Length: 621
Image (cartoon, rainbow, N blue to C red; front, top):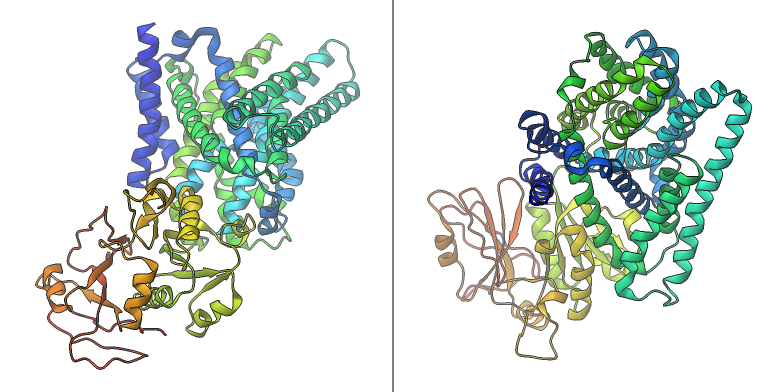
């Protein structure tokens, strides 16, 4: 018992630790989790999933994959398909059969598998899967369209790949018992339809029960989790491996029913998915058997090369031929196709089944599937960023700032950031108020920033920080609180300080971090603007430190932010005091110098020592 608890703790530490290292270093998380599992399993023997979990291993992995697929389905909003230019439909309807056919040819002629095993394994290789694609997309700065295509494809073709293997096995198994191929195909089709309807029906039931108060708030997440497990097991009882299709349909259906309850459930489902992806990937990597790996043959290397450089690119290029997806994006999508949990799990399952049918090649499926997983994870994980840059399909290389509200101060901040060559977008619900930003050539977003439709037009991944600067403190707090999960709780800011002694004030947990060490509020900002305060920029050098810069500014000046040489922005607040270095630029909010003539357009400050640009942003009316 104590050993099992230690194993569970080790799996959690290794999985989450690998993801944390990936976040800090930019290395692919899937490759780090694979290495961690191999070190803990085959190398040291500390974690041996088959020994530690026994007969519980297979159902645990199956349920985890089902929950991961369901969570992936919840991320698939049909509005996002507009950005995919029809590519997802093509990759599902054309790409799956093409990949299946080309893969079968490669398995037979290159890997040397017999036809039945080659066809079954090629069906499994159709799978890419969210367990490997989503961590890769999270770390790769991709343009919106290829990102959406890869995400949708991975979640849609996961159950399709499993169904391809099921269809092959059932035809082989039942025709051996005297059933006709047509009869088997019809029964499988009906079972798949029933499985899909079961997922859709479960989604409709939840969508009916949750808004009407039939499930209390504290039980919604547990009820949803148990419902996913229930429909997955129920569908598998109807037809083996059809549960993956059921939970995917259930997730996609719920994602497009626009239920208010699911906004509160998003953090829970994302957290549990991260835990499951980390844990299951480490467990599967640890379950690698060195004896099985010794079955690996040299011709399999040629098979891996054909799979990477011929089958996948040909599948994508043929499927997307004539589409509106540019060739450079097609080439990138054609390169990225890592395989992961589902491919290994299904291969292990059918290796035993094909062996029972008398096909000796079934025994090599496990070693071959792990070879595919390792090769694709390392090949695609470590080259995705490079390939994206080389093909020109990256998003904005420098993350900017989203400013909510068009007050005179927020526009001055936007102009300052633009002058410092930092990307900036000003958002407001009023087209008229945004006119002042458009007149200054500042990028704008017209619409309610909290609306669900905003996700289709404004990619939050473009921003490293959010500043809520409307004249309504409560709305600023709402914006920060709602968008903190997307931008980061540490990166959402608003004007005004927290008054812990005032029972009428908003608590810190419901608002963003405070801008300025002094905690300037909306009214104070407006008052200082009328007095001629401006934003001033100072470039630091080895000879000109922050202390020197502050001495050059008028008394009472407040430090606002530091922009590093790499483009990283750090705001000063009551809880954070960045330490600027040489080469960084410090932006301060300062009163006019004594005796200075106030201008309504541009106010210049004296350039001294390390000041490369001491021109203040306009003091806007």
